[in-house]
Length: 62
Image (cartoon, rainbow, N blue to C red):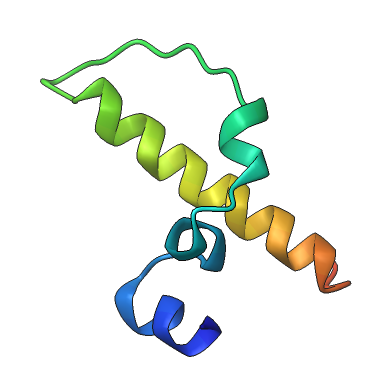
């Protein structure tokens, strides 16, 4: 599943539908230059899910 996620530009959580991050995250943003709020949330969730995955794998941030 990790290879499919990598090839499609998604996280494993996005593909499996098992995203605990999406259930916990709350965000507030101001859209500028015609940005779509839903697209901004999806990108934010992508990075947060990737961060959670790396933490689960024991891979340090720096």
